[in-house]
Amino acid sequence: MAQSATPSEDEQQHWLRRLEATGRAQARYLWLVLVVGLFYAALRVRGTDPEQITVPIVSLKLDAATVLASGGPIVAFLVLVIMGAIRAWTHALEQYRGTSPANDAEQLDTHPNALDLAMYTTDKSPAVMRHLLSFVYPLFLTAALVESVWLGWWLWSDPVVPGREYFLVAWVVSWIPAAVLVLSNMWWKRIRQVFDRKQAG
Image: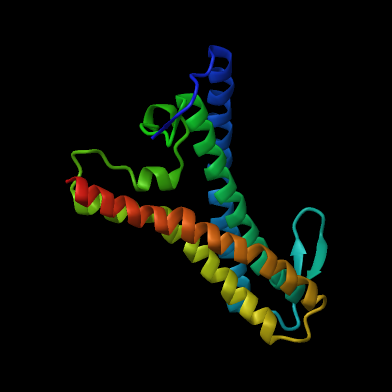
């Protein structure tokens, strides 16, 4: 375990505020990826020919195919944002604790999100339950990436979508790093943690 210099009280207060801000951001974007994912899934199932989408309040009419074409890149980008928020929160925790990696974050997580509460366990929880629930985050983010692939495949298969090439480039540029981060920072770390706990037990 790497040990860094103990932060001053002012620095600790700064990192504590950073923890709160990144925790709130993470919660917002987790809900956003759920809502956006449901919207694009409903639009994809419904089909687009030859419909338009009307934006409420401003009565702006948009081509449904163009809106759907943006789905793959947007969902992948939101996964990137969530991964960034998680990494920023982890870094703030390490700076606050003065250790890397930092443990025992529960008392500092003053704004737990829905996934945090869904996967919440204690040392008294059954080991199988702890192991299974530790994969809630990677499963949620992987589901978003799978939907992004589904939307991207539709875009690839439909050559008549306006601006199709630009949307495909945006999708590839956002999806690949998002997939790498979810695989390495979520799945791989969770699997290692499960094996480490089994060996320690």
